[in-house]
Length: 229
Image 1 (cartoon, rainbow, N blue to C red):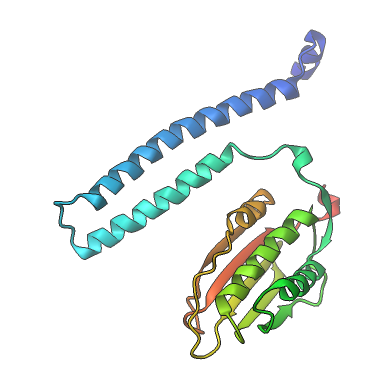
Image 2: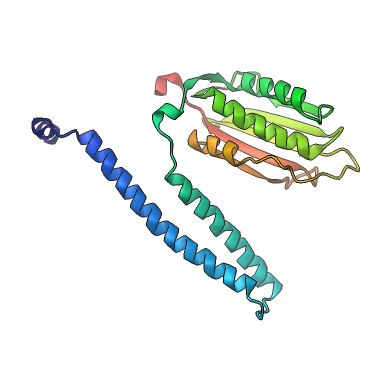
């Protein structure tokens, strides 16, 4: 009944709803950003207080809180930047092939082309739907960071399989014995954003499991089948 009434008045309910949702989201982002900026500012003041003496455990907890508030601020600002539909060029993707081709290309262009790469990827194609060009760009950035970290004669292990309707991917970079790895200079912010825009996620940091000192990138990407589109 309400849809019929909207049609009679010439109102495009879908357009109105989109505009209302856009304004609602803008207001939420504005209010949330203000509170987070204030919280981050107060934490910075406490940590940088020249005459303050914080016990080490408290300084550690406050530093962790400051860093996490900063991450939330970044994610909040990102909410306003979701691209229009024409930003994506969707296609069916065989993720297994995407990974292998990215490894070949990064190896051919990397200065560390003597890195050993171990591929532990499911023999299935790991099919999904997404923007092939942008996902390839993200995967190549993750690989480039792993290659740079491991250095000459190091090892990069690429592991991928499907689990609970998600494609799970790990890039584990391990320097050669006695090697002195450096933190990669590759900017991964765009690569992480591409995964988030596809409904996935990426986590970058030190490996918590052996080999100690490894550099680990863990990615998740939802599996989207054509029948769902």
